[in-house]
Length: 279
Length: 225
Picture 1 (spheres, rainbow over the protein chains, first blue to last red):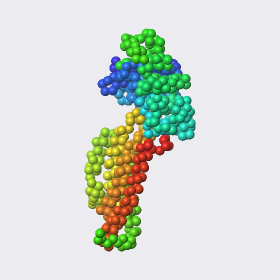
Picture 2: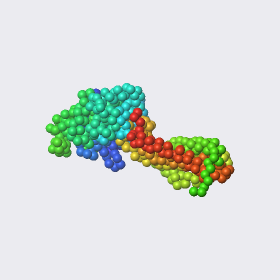
Picture 3: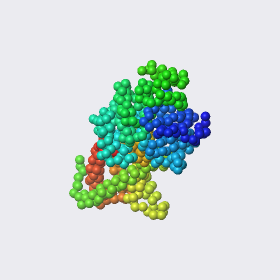
Picture 4: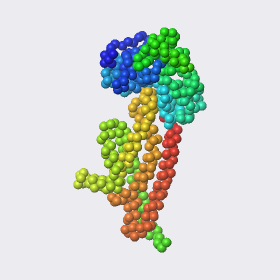
């Protein structure tokens, strides 16, 4: 299917706060996402699994507009009600009601405030303390007073077991602690949706459990999330649905039970078996 | 040692040395301020391929010129005959050495900007920061931390190189010494005074530079945001 012939009609379903329709993304000649479509309801947790290089990280980056789209559309409901469309290579456009035209930097930034992104490699600002990492964006983006931002940072650090680390340099923390700081940093912006990109992949089993517990805490808060992971058991216990993404295509999107009992293709079945054996 | 040291002959010239020291400090301050601002701006511009193509040859030429040659070239360039107005020697020196410092600073800043981890920038963007906010709060702190050790060396070098200003008759501390020598022929005493003045200025500056380096190595201020 050519990326240039994307249907313009929105496929939004009532109740969805995010709908992704036929999203395409290329890097040079390589098609990394090939017509990915799905929706996400308020409070829903979608797991994304699949082989490395299948487009999982790129999908999250496209959802946060850190990458431009080469085709397709993304509908963000909630506070912005923004539809981002790209059906050519000239960048992103807004196509929401009267707000049509090239997507402005302000529009992009306003949208990103509502989406929390937790990166695989933490991406913390290493010259800053834990507190410095946590309060910077609320202060400069949301114009929160330092006192209020620090108070919320301390509260979240206590909740996530980092109460005694708040003045520490992030370079002094373990991988699990750093990843929790990254999660808290995203939470400081009070996002509507959280995107978590293989947040346990760089961690040993003990630290992985730490971070998984932190993510379960997010579920208890009722956050809408997309969680890219290689931990099938974790995904099954956490997520409402799981997407199997391979070679840029969403091969199957189903409940964890259905994915296990009725894999849509031999590839899905084999991948699930490998994940099970690897436990 | 047969030389008959006689500093009492120098004493009447203390005002000339004092005012020369003031000029030396003023020159250095102006050069550091202008050169740094200009250099950082050019360094940030060097991210853009077009700017890089245009500016790099200029930077390379300025860096290739010995400071004394650059000062003399500017001295004879910025005259009535060439540009329609004659720039005072003091400002010729400030312009020439600011260009020299800016050329080195721009390259340092360019390298530091290229070394900013993309993940750190992505994190800022993902949190909703504008490009300017990312530059100010993520890129610049990193650039400062990366460039401060080399910049402090450049700054101390600028203080020492201010002695070149006297070749175009700027009344700095070296010019004061030359005046004394012309008047009373006490060269060794005059240059001893100049050397002492530079030691008094440069040694504390070097210690201060080391402290700034240590501070930068720790990651800067405790007040992070």
